[in-house]
Structure formats: structure tokens, C-alpha cells
Image 1 (cartoon, rainbow, N blue to C red):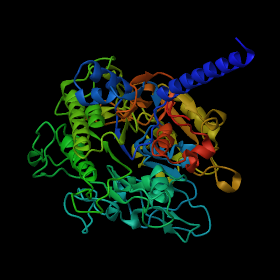
Image 2: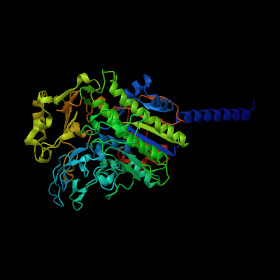
Image 3: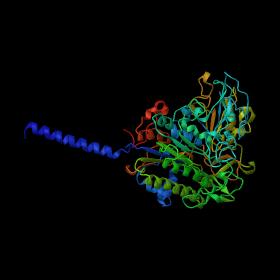
Image 4: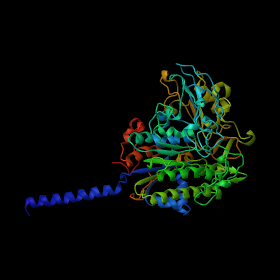
Length: 562
């Protein structure tokens, strides 16, 4: 064989090997561009829940999606794992350090109190222009005109509608450096979102969530409108339950017969399913090119759209008339009531899939299912409430510090800033070390597992303080992580909570599904922040359009890289 023939043969073999290598690489990649992304947060849904329901064949629709999806078993949500930072992690790709969202209810050393008392007790106060003020911040139902109403009290909405018109601007904290203007939730966050990137690229966007304030998914606009959202639907989850004629779940639950017990939607195992079904129906309407309530709309199917489910989260926490949700053991075996919530969500996901198929959109839509947060403890035998019923079990960190260390706006209004975590902002000029020493002295009665402050806190977040002193006005001075199972509550109607850093709080399900994807599980550690750049990648947009990708280096999920 001549040297030329040998070279030619080698070239053929080389090209063949290269082609085989490229084919293998193509087979391993799962980022063929989709036309749409359906994003779902099943709040509270652990990776364990997904594994158990698929293994037991109680989630046929989730199981079917798993057959054409990548399942990430070691996914962590944000820390803290509250709904607000959890949602922001998913849609911005950023941590609280960048985004500035630590909790629905938190604190800012610069902003000023609202002009009117909020529905949840953030008191009105004076805004002194041109200087730091300091106030508790609230972005939940308390911002609404009337949080007892499903429509948030807006006369512009029907009884079952809800959205940004429900927000009362007088109940929003104010910015002393911007003329004491109210700070809307979408302008409160410090990073852009996938909704902003997709909207600016010409894509139609839609989302449904539990509070009007969660229109924060729009990302900053600098105006009183979340203009990156083309359609937003937020029936208020903490409103009084009402009958919903004509609304039925996939399993046939008639929501005209909800339990009108004087409580909100989260106080009844069936009522919460009916509440979620309103948002399910909105998603089905979007798949059909309609508005969230079924109006004609633009005729466009959104590029990015979706919702959050509350049913699983409520099912994990609730004790209703002595009947417990949650789990029967540390392996995550659900109680019958808890299983009912999971089956409801699975049925709703089946409705989404069926509708996508009916409209010939299934193959062009990537479905991403994750959770804003988990719930702790899974093993309800570990549940230990502080102070507990009758105040018998101990003292919460906020009570330990009391008048000497906490700012006025925090006194007697701690609310959800203490769940299975305690976020503490101290009075200006007080000693963080003195406060920590007092907590250490009371560690047993306060159920304290770990205290983060100073360097241990600043490895995760910006240093706390005023911007003029190089600090972040939103970072807590101290974060208390309690022992596993400890929840700072006196309620007799709950047996778990979220917000903390524990495994049960943070290890959530994450599934990315599309008919073109080769099914597999990935056990390497990932975070829900990686969902945002992955969504842009799937839609053929540049992940670096996100502030979080450029500033925090958030990568796309494994399997969707270049």
C-alpha cells in the first residue's frame, strides 16, 4: 500500500471516528431548541417524594414525564428556603446575596416604612428623604387591598380573578432615595429574570402564583407595572375560601362544595386542591392561546409560562381536625391525606400534557418541574415546636434577644421571619457578639443548632450594614439554624415548615422533560438557580443575558451545556 493510500485510509478512519464522536456527543446533549417552556413549581416537593411516587406507581403522569426527562436527585433550592427567595432563585438564577430577597418578610436598613399599615402588621411610618430609614419589608398577601378576598380586594377583578391591581401601593415600603416612592416587588429584587429576557426578545410570557406580590417574576422595570409579564394571575391563597361553581379537579372533586369553614384555602386538604385548580385552568387556557380566565387574548401560546402548586406544601404541614398530613416515617411514606395532594398534582400535570398533545405542542414544549422549597421535618416524629402549644417547649431566638437587640419594627411582629430558621437584624449600634453570646447562653431552650454571623455568614452572603459603610442593607446580622425538627411556632395546626437550610428544606425535585430527551438520573449536586439559564438555553437564548450568570457564574444544568 502506497503512502498516499495509507494517508487517505487514515483520514477516512479519522473522519469516521470524529463523526462517531460527534454522534455520541449529540446523543448526550438534550438542548434541542424548544418553542415553549412550561415551568412548574410543586412547592414542598422533595426529590424523595418524586422517587417514592414514581416507584409506587401513584404518579403515572410524573412517571411518564420521567421516561423522557432528566431527573436531578441532588438538587438544592435557595438558602434561606422561603417561597420568595426560592422563586427568585428559579427565575433569576441568583442567590439572595445578589437578588436581595431573603424572605417574604425581612428587613432593609435603608428603605422606609409604608404609608399605611399592611394587612400583616407592618406598621406605617415616616419616610425621611435622602437618608437611610430602616424598615421591615413584606411581599406577600399583606400588600393587598383586602387579603381576605380571593381577588385581593380589587374592584377591577371578578371574584375569582387576581393580579397586580390587587396591590395597595400605600402598603408598600418606600425608597427614601427615590422621592419616597413605593417599592413594588419586581423593583425590590436586584437582578433580571427569564421573563424579562424572554419578553425583551419578543416572547409572550405568563405566570400564575399565590400572591399579587409574586409578579416579582417580571424582574425590575423601574415602573409601577411588571411589564415583562404579558399575563399574570394570582388568586390570593390566604383569602377566605369560597365556593367555585364549575371548577373541578382531574379526579372530579367538585369545587362548588368547598368547605366554607371561615379559614383560608390552606386550612383544608380539599380546599387547597380547588384553589390550585384555578391556576391549573389558567395554564390550560394559556396552552389554548387564551388569557388566564379564558378570554380571547392575543392568540399566542407563551414562550415561558407556568404556575406554582400549593397542595403538596399544605399537605405536608397541615393538621386538620386531628387528621394529619405529612409522612408516617423517615422514609417519606405519605399519609393518605398527603398522598391525595400528590395525586391531585399528578392529575393536573396530566391535564397539561393532554392539552399540549391536543394542540400539537407537546414535542415543541420542554416541561420543567421543581420546587421553591421543601419542608422539614419529613420524619414528623422529629417535629419539636418552640414555644409550642401553651409556650411549654422553649423560647425562640427573637424572644431571647428581645428589646435590647431588635429594631422597633421587628418587635412583636416577627411573623414568618422565624419558621425553621431565625433571621435576625439588630438595632443600629448594638454588638453582634453580645447578641450571639446571649443566644449561646440560651441555646438549649431556643433549640439552636448553629449560629451564623461575621465570617461564617459572609462566606455565603454580603456583609450586613449600610451601603455607605460597605454593607448590604438586607443581609441579616445573625442567622440561627435550629436543630433538625425544631420549628418556631405556637400553632397546633402544623407539623412542619420551611425556610431553613436543612436537607428536608432544600433537597427538592427537579425534572426536565421533552420527548427528545434520553431519560436518565443525574446524581451530581445542582441548584434550582441553574433552571433559569437552562430555560434560556432551551429556548435558543443567551444565558449570559441574566445578571446572575454574569455576576455569580450560574451554569446551565448538566446535560444542557454546549
